[in-house]
Amino acid sequence: MYGLDLTGHPAETRVVVAMSGGVDSSVVAALLKRAGYDVVGLTLQLYDHGEAVHRAGACCAGQDIHDARRVAEKLGIPHYVLDYESRFREDVIERFADSYLAGETPVPCIECNKKIKFRDLLNTARDLGARALATGHYVASRALPNGKRGLFRAADPDKDQSYFLYGTTADQLDLLRFPLGEMPKSETRAIAHELGLSVADKSDSQDICFVPSGKYTDVIERLRPEAVNPGDIVHLDGRILGQHSGIIHYTIGQRRGLGVASGEPLYVIKLDAASARVIVGPREALETRLVYLRDINWLGDMPIADANGLPIAVRVRSTRPPQAAILHVNDGNVMVELPDAEFGVSPGQACVFYESVDPRSRVLGGGSIVTPQHPRVEARNIINYPLGLSA
Image (cartoon, rainbow, N blue to C red; front, side):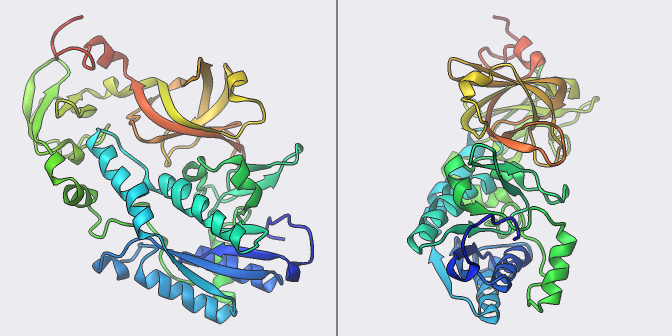
């Protein structure tokens, strides 16, 4: 039931539910309790920023912990709160700040899922004798012919969270379950109302939950004030067009708010952290066909070394549908070739692998983007030579 695929009588099967205080995880706990499972709720306290406690769209803070506790009380299940603030700060927030200072555009939800929610929560679930850890994520987990479990895109394409969960390992998938992966969000809301849950109309959480003001730069400047250096805004042709107050205020592909005047539309092409330069140019300079990756998590059936030349589909940002690609693996280096160019691919973002472009396709893993290859940028030798000079 609900995609659990667990043997044994429900009453004798313990399932831990990661309860964030939102409607999705609350419905998961309620459905499993109604099905007769021995349900235990766990909530992580990850941060507390005062004003963020009651901010709409936040999660894992004061109000959300209170909401999770109220739902658990209504369902009559045990509920525990785990203080992971120090781990979250070290593994997610600090890494987030350093990534921006390096000229990257990180996705903190991915790190949180890999380093906190699944790694640490799974260990706690095992300690509690649970047969499974269930979450409210919109992604599907199904048994494979080889006896393992695979990760698949959710039935609701608008809520699919597979992009943020590509880092889930094969061993973790054996214990993880995602009961909402086969239903639309509208059904989740309807169930919450039917069961009389207090969070039925609660707003969905946002990607960067720990940014109380909504401005990520405030967090970075508070954590690394000495590292926010001003520098030049430079055109691809070598002209200095202006100055900036820190590369953290810019992202690859950005057009508005550059702070420079020009007779042509300009976009951020590259962030050169070493020299504190923001490189700008025309949109065509953003074209990317080759994407290099690090920190690969592979979920395919064959060893990744045997996947060289494998036709797959990829997403290089969460808001884009998968597109056809070719996976290249040479001497441990992993690269994705995009027959149809993408624009504005940024280091620090994830490139997620899928079996195909099918809406319910299997997730084959992914990696973190390190060096998108821009042909026009390479032609100018921006990475290795001063602007305006040839090799």
